[in-house]
Image 1 (cartoon, rainbow, N blue to C red):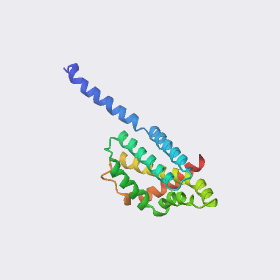
Image 2: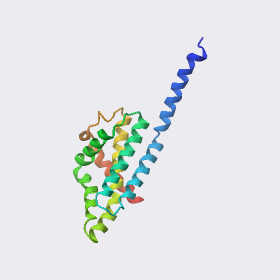
Image 3: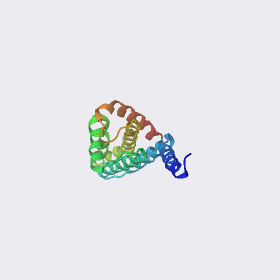
Image 4: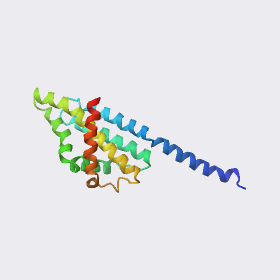
Amino acid sequence: MKTEKEEKPVNDEVQATEAVAEDVSKEAIDRLIRHHVYGSMAVGLIPLPLVDFASMTAIQLNMLRVLAKRYGVPFSKDMVKNILSSLVGGAVPVAASGPLAASLAKAVPAAGMTVGVVTMPIISGATTYAVGKVFVQHFASGGNFLTFNPEKVKDYYAKMFKQGKKVASAN
């Protein structure tokens, strides 16, 4: 016969597992990504070239920090910055160059500002959406930042970027 003391760790472990399961629910994760997509779209409206790009990167870093916490993955800001640069800058160069090009377009008087302000929010939102979806898939399969390989996810990133443009355009 088990004593209450012997049963308590099992109950605590079950409760902890249930809390993690709730914290990583599809709805909660989708809401988290959507929240960060909206934030990225908002900073895309900043009229200063590269400030909007840096702000979008900060929002994506925060999203990855929160996702990592929810999946129990250790987070290192410097490591994640490098991974994020590699994913967004190297995995899909055409899609990745979009945020930087839209940001730099704002430096051109009148027409450039209009193009940048119209395109940057959608591109920022789509990029953030794609980054979020890629890392959710990676973390859900048991991966962490050390095992992340941008080359292996470039097709999925491109697909999620296209889907993200639709999501951002609808808002």
